[in-house]
Amino acid sequence: MRHRMMRESGGRHQEWNAGPSGPAPVPEQPVREDRVAGRLVDRAPDRAAGRSRERPADGFADQEEFSRRILAAADFPVFGVVAGAPADEARAGRALAAFETSGGELRWAEVRCGDWRSAAGPYVTVRTYRPGAEEGEQLPELEDLVEDERDRVYEQLGVDEGDGPGRVRALRVWMTVDGEPCAVEVHEDRPVPEPGAPAVGGPEPVWAGRLRVGGLTVTVCGRGMPPGAVELGPIGDFECYLRGRTELLRDLAARRARHVPVEERELPPAVGMEAHRALIAQTVAESAAIEAQVRVGRTPRLPRGLRGEAGAVRWEAAVRQQMRLATETRQEAVAAVTSMVNHLNRLSQQTHWLLGTAEGEAAVEEVVRYTVFASEVASLPAQRAWAQLWRERPGNGGAGVWEEQRLAEQLWLSAWEQWRAARS
Image (cartoon, rainbow, N blue to C red):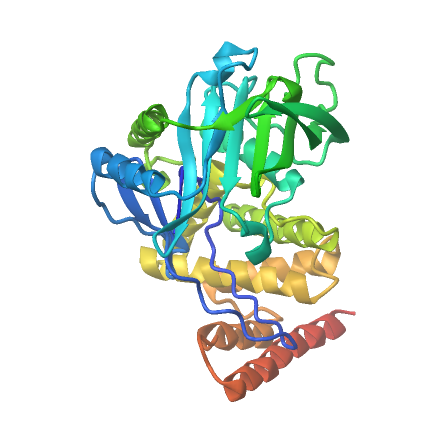
């Protein structure tokens, strides 16, 4: 069970990605519980709308008491920034940022300190894993810790520091841990400024390091202060961290309370099917970006510019246009747009011609026209084959079900190839 601050998700469509030759997808994992702003949030996906559902639970006092019990029962020390670090402001703003339990047992805990409201910092997070954690799972790479910190700044402060890697270097520094100097290998990432940006005053470098302390693995990530200035020690009293967590959750809850859901906003009027085309361009770009990251061995994550508010607005605009042009209910429009997006995402994954070619543009246009008007487009056999494939996509089925799906997908791809041949 993982407990951390809310992170916004830019994804709106439901991705179904069972390849014709690949294994059946792993069934969905159990619901993960996040204690956020006094609400227990059920992050199970809403299959119709591609969004998350929320169910209210206890308030801040219950959340704080729950965290207090978990930390009091911990059978290993949890480290944080202690007195002695030269930057006093980096020791302020202390809060319990996240923790994970398994069978009621604390697996790791992460504390933060510093100015979380400023992209300049100083700001440090320290995560302590229970002994033997690295034997049972693969711990995050230092590059991923840096990207997680840049995600936090984007999601909580709205500051996009660019997608990494930027200018990176490996450092070996001495960090004081429990009063003793400890050698730490550090990964530092300094974002590359955008063309035309000023040479000074750009995004801050972010660094991350991992060290071993008495059989424990501890990771540290920071900005706005050098890693050698950080002094770590075991936390004896968690009260200020618990109060800080509650204060932070209240702050985030207040921000969300002022947020107007995109479904309730007045959006600029869309022209024709431009909203559909804009949504497709974004979602195909998302898939391409994820595939590129996987190819080079990076942890897949959406580029920050494709997440959050902009994606939600594009999705909502397309749904509203679908309702208006196709004379559909919201539920019907959501289903149609979801199928359209997955159709073209899947086609971009299975072919080499959808992106950057004239026939790819034509295919997109025909999928859009069929979605909106059920038009008698030249690719009608492919459209109907996809409709059946999407309608009958399997949940948990045996080998026979997946073989049927494999054959159905081959028929769908064959229909698109026949369409291409007829165009040449």
